[in-house]
Length: 457
Image (cartoon, rainbow, N blue to C red; front, side, top):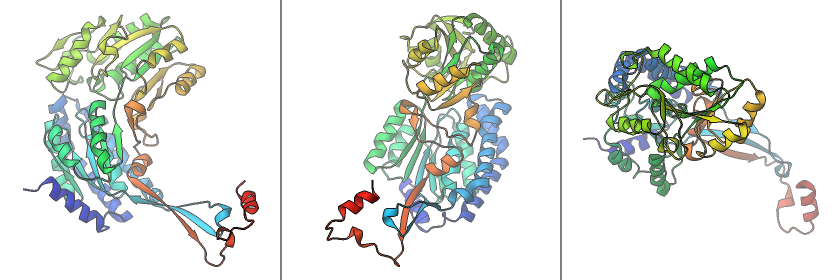
C-alpha cells in the first residue's frame, strides 16, 4: 500500500529532477488536464448532482466552464509570465544589471472544500502546474461522489509522482500530510480550520494561502435599480443554495427603499424557482444534516418575510428573507452559508459602514447604487477581499482580477497570473560587470562619506 510518505518522497524526487520546470512540460500538462476534464464531464456533473443536487447548468457554469476558461487564459499567457523580468539597478552599483527570475516553489499541498468540491480544488492546481510544481490534492470527503470523480480524473492524466490525490477524513489525513514540509499549502474552507492549517504549517515555515469566508455585505442605496438589484442579489444568494464563500450574507437596504426591495426579491424567488421551490430542478440542497440544522436555526432569529419552508430529510431550506434581525443574534455573528438572507435598514452611508464594521474583513462586498460617490465611499472605507458594483459573485469569474481575502477572510491571491505568482518564487539576481571595479565601497573609507551622501541623498 502506498503511504503518504511514499507519495511525498516520490514527488520530492520528481521535482528535484527538473522535469516540471520547462515551459513545454507545463503547457502539455495543462492541455492534458483540460482534455481529462472534458472526458469526464458527464461524470463530474452527475457527481455534483448526487452530492448537492446541483442542476447541470449551475454545475457546469460554476465547476467546469470556469476551469476551461482558467486553463485557456493560463495557456495564452504562460510563456510571458515565465520570462525573466529585467529591472533597473541603483547607480551606486554601476555597472550592474538586475533580473527577477520566476521559479517553481516545489511540492504543494492543495486542500479543497465541499461546497464547490471540483472547481475549488482543480482551480489552484492549474496555478500549481503552470508555475512548475508538483501537487498533492486532498478533496473534501463530505462530497464523496465528487471526491471519487476527482480521483479518476487525476489518475487518468497524471502520474502520482507529479500530481496525486489523498483521500480520507480531513481531521485525520490533513495532520498526517502536514507532518511533512510543503513548499506551499493552499487551503479553501472555514476560518476555524484555516487557523489550524496555519498552525500546522508554522513549524515548517511553509507559506500558506487561505481562502476563507466571512459575512459579505450587500448594500442597496436609495438610488439603485431595485428590480435589477433584487434579481442579482437573489441569484447570488441562491446559487448553490447559499453555500458560497462570497454569497451575499446579509443586505443593508436604505430605509427609504427597504419595503419595495423586499417585494422585488420575493418576486425574484418566485420567478426563478416557482411557487414551490422544493419542486424546482434548479435549486440545490444543503450538503448534509449538520449544515441543515445550523442554517435552520437561523430562521427563528428574525421575522420571516418570505420562505422559511424546510425538510430535514431532503436537506432543503427555501430561500428565506429575514427582517427585524438583531446584530447580536448568531445569524449576524456567524457566516450563514445557506439560503437565509437578513435584510436590515440603514439611514446613511456612514451608518452602513458602521454596521459592516461589526463583522470586519468580509471576503466580498456588493454595492447597488447609481452614485459614484457612494461606490467610492464603500470601496475606500471598508476593507474587503473583492466584490462587485451592481452585481454579485461574478468578480470571481474574471481571471484578470485577483481573488482572495483580507484579515479574517484569508490571505493570498489566485486566478490568472495571480495563481502563477502565488505558486512561484521570485528570485532577484544582480549581475555586476568586471570591466570596472568602483573602489568606493572598499576600505579604507577615509573621506568617502561626503561622496556617499551625494549618491544616496
